[in-house]
Image (cartoon, rainbow, N blue to C red; front, side, top):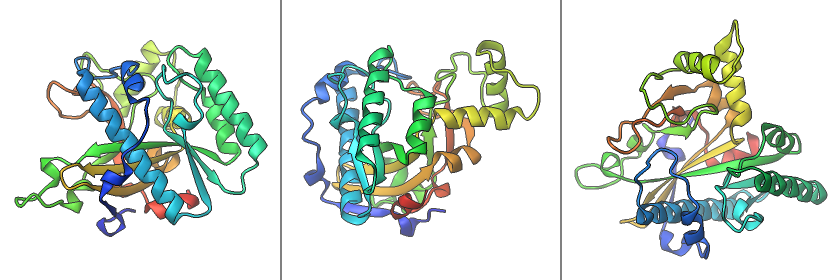
Length: 277
């Protein structure tokens, strides 16, 4: 369980800004998953924010969790940044068998190159997991007005009112506004996605979603004005899906049709406990 004392505050984040030279290429090949009219400048700003959060996370791991190694997907990808990244990076113990690591990285690049959308299979995700190589997503979010008090100071409790988020496996956009919980999602999957289930359907759909998810999720908030970052913590896909709901966001004319699997940030753990997940 995360409380506000677990949040790690990183100051002077200007020094962490990514030196990635391929941001423009990433932007050019970014698919608008829910906000169809997102501008080029908005995509560039969001991409830079994501890379900044990833750099902050990587630096924190290197300095504070000595037995773990994080490598960014961008450091070993072979698609010239032309496809959507299937995840942010891999984390593993420093005793990893390097031959196995090289084999899995090669397998990842092979699957990305052969998939139109740059995805990797659930089977490959499981292979990573069985070899103690964990697929990671670092989710970055801008601090905004709802996270600040009247004096524009950060309210850590307000950050913890947010969620870890993931897209469902079988549907990202609910154009007809009919899906607001797992049971409606199950009905959709039965009708349109050949999902076969006669009993205990909630457990079965959650197991399907777990296979599709990354292994570990990290949430970082960025206050660009104050040049600070807040590492909230992390959560395993197992804990995530056990406590998950289906929900939509309330950002008018932006993402109100987007469908999410969500669980409270409070259900995660301190970032330093990542090695125990």
